[in-house]
Length: 171
Image (cartoon, rainbow, N blue to C red; front, side):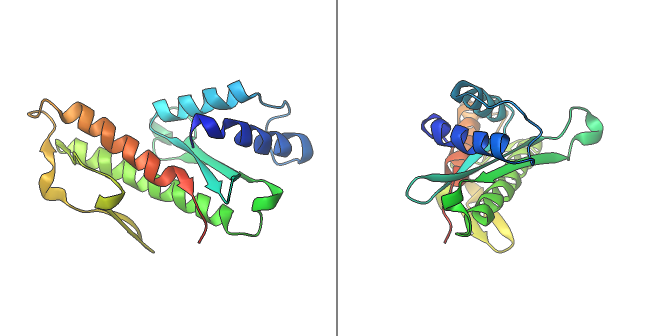
């Protein structure tokens, strides 16, 4: 999702808050609230996603369930669809985007944990099948400690994965 999607996401969230009993919120969100949530999630390495069927018809996000070491691998997710997005595969596409993004972030962290940065991670270096995403072109990875450009390469890799999985389009 991008800041340009905030108006549509706000409308979807507020419809759920004001018209259903499935939200833990009882007060409608402002567009500024949604933009702040997007920024907070992104700063922590998570993301917000949108389903786009000639316009935003759904959103999803995920983040850490609670702070603390015991919850290190526990995530929570939110997903909601506008009426026009229901029954069209948007929910399934959003859940897949969450799962694939989470897997890619784990792969990036594992690579960094052994001192490597892919350096050119993009939609062209990720294969996705029914088992999920797989990173290819690993021989071009750089030593994170020895390469002066590793920091911005890592940031570019993460941003490219955000762009790759940030907009879900049902098939």
